[in-house]
Length: 131
Image 1 (cartoon, one colour):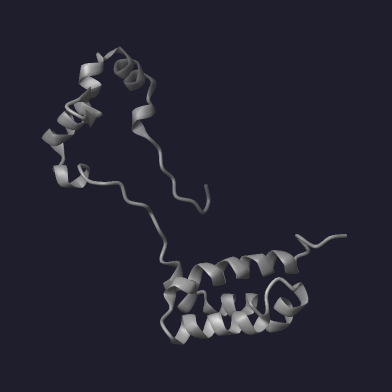
Image 2 (cartoon, rainbow, N blue to C red):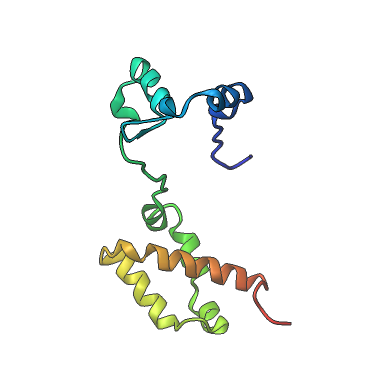
């Protein structure tokens, strides 16, 4: 896992699984609360605000990176000649989206530009071309 986020679940230990399988259902789910027993134990050790909340995703600041550290990579990936040669989208549209993203503050376009950059990088390497 050279360049990845390593996440291991300590609750997968076989001893904990065996213990949990032996618990009565009333300790697993009570008063509309799932993982009831686990939460009761955690309340004693960890502030409830840290785990008693809605789930949140883990996102990287891709829009910011595409405007800063990855800007030259994005610009290189979206060269007008490469876009025209591939023929997936009009180069003028891509140029407009880049301008809107970089200077007009339309950060929501990062997904579109990222997808196009990846597509054209693969296309440039011959993946996706028919023989």
